[in-house]
Amino acid sequence: MTGPTYVFKSFDEAKKIPGTPQGCLWGVYDKDGVKDQVGSINLLTPEVVKEASKEIQSGQHVQLDWPLHSLSHPGFGRKLFSHKILSLKESLGAYGFDDEIHINTQSGSQWDSLRHHASAETQMFYNGLTFDESLTSQRNGTHNWCERGGIVGRGLLVDMVRFYEKRDGSSPNPITRHEIPIKDVIEAMNEQGSVPRQGDMLMIRTGFIRWHNQASDQERKEGTFDNSQLIGLEACEETVRWLYDQHFAALIADTVAVEAWPPRRDSPWKIHDWALVWWGTPLGEMWDLEGLSQECEKHQRWTFFVTSAPLHIKGGVGSPPGSIAIF
Image (cartoon, rainbow, N blue to C red; front, side):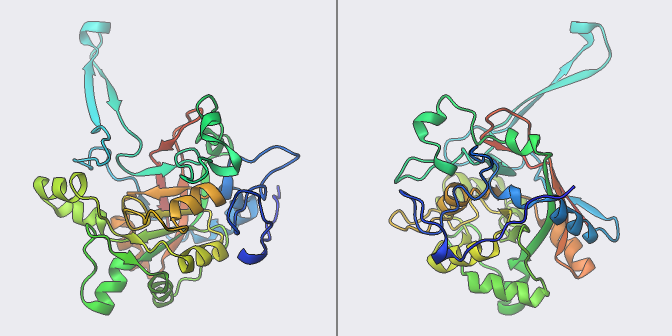
């Protein structure tokens, strides 16, 4: 089985789509006149997946989902995860249990689907879906990834904690609005000996999960629920143009928003806009990259085979990743 080969024009030469900024990729993945709902996950063709499978050498594997109960003080007014265990003795006369959970898919390790975020200026989601249309439509939901067979390919970890600790002696405080310049990401990749490929799933370790795991409950409340500033990539023209040139299948981080938070309101370079809206590139947020970083260090390579099985929900807005990295 073979899949399409995607060749992209440069940022400045990309086809201009009315009502969108230069560099928008709407229509690139459309087929037979049908609007695409999968986005850059299309880059994970059978050929790309087969090549990625060569990363499996030792058979060691690491799950990348942060435990669902971990985020003790979700921000932005989101509900806390809850888990209830139900005895079956009285209801069924059986000696066993069921369980029920409540989860806001944005309150832990997550995928942002292509219907999670719309451009504030246009009120449009990926590939021209309007906010009003989305109110009664399942378009751009997570089910599209599931019906395609889930998400499978090569992951590339850029360990910024490791890089900064080696270069500077310490890494930035992850509960400050520290903007990671893309030049530092490139330097860190070069130091690791990592070379990105089209269709890679880029993962950025900032240290937020490590901080949260080590913090007291009061520190967590002050640093997440009460705090509006968090570490992430610098959202600027240089970052957006570099990300465009790489054509990653997904952008993932261990922090709350991938980009430094909050975004600058007057900036045309918000990563949420460019990734989710203009390119159709899913964002992975609050992934647990701690064990992964250790495994990469042990193997002295920062690429690996990765799988993800999002929740199969029609029109899903977000999902735990259900992701495993295999070496």
